[in-house]
Image (tube, rainbow, N blue to C red):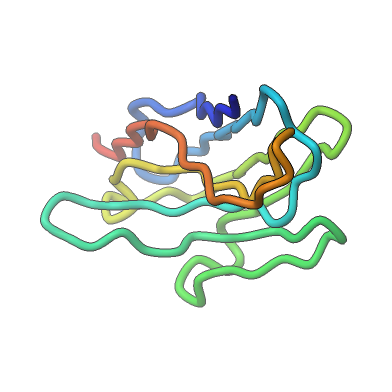
Length: 120
């Protein structure tokens, strides 16, 4: 069984920073791309950033320069460094992993989400 678990959310003032972490665990044979998505109240879930297993990164255009995705392949972990946070960044942030489980099947796995609130 595969699990994806996020951590690091919280309340931060505008202009502040947060670092989110996401760990994939369980019967994992291989991991492809991992990424972050977010969903604000009343809005659809949207892409934040992704990183492939060979290090290629993709960002939402509106977030380039403020958010940075990185990955520790040995720890099956992906990070999201968020700087210069704005109130409009408030959302639940979800981690996604394209993972080949021990059964040999590739599937998309989602975490339960971590709340990020940007407010003074």
